[in-house]
Image 1 (cartoon, rainbow, N blue to C red):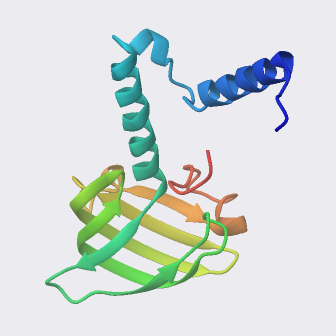
Image 2 (tube, helix red, strand yellow):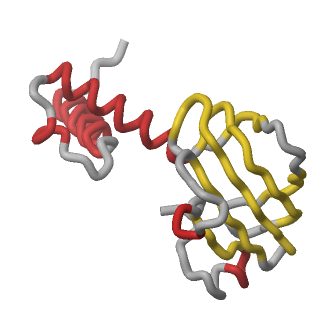
Image 3 (tube, rainbow, N blue to C red):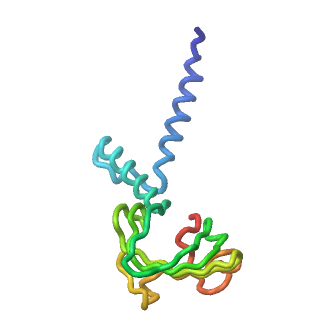
Length: 152
């Protein structure tokens, strides 16, 4: 059995510690944590919040007739048409569980427009919705808001 030299093991340990330390993202756990177990809790909590903001997956439920056959990948390929005003059950809008949800969208491949609402919104008041252009042309044309699903 071969034994690693001390310098090699130390370098490997330091590299692993640096890699694990960099996983904390933009937060400073050393300033926020009261003790080591609290730091672990904060780290896991921050990663759960990150996951909730990155994922939308679930089912939609409504009592009103709606139609939606609409989707896009990273706001670059909008295809379809959709209108939905009801509830979303799953992970969506940064939340887990049952959430009010609204979608009105049109996608033509290179251009699209969508209005999205999560939680507290009024479909008749655009200030309560996230309205955005999607697709290569939609990202260049008004409205100039950054799409919610655009990579940060």
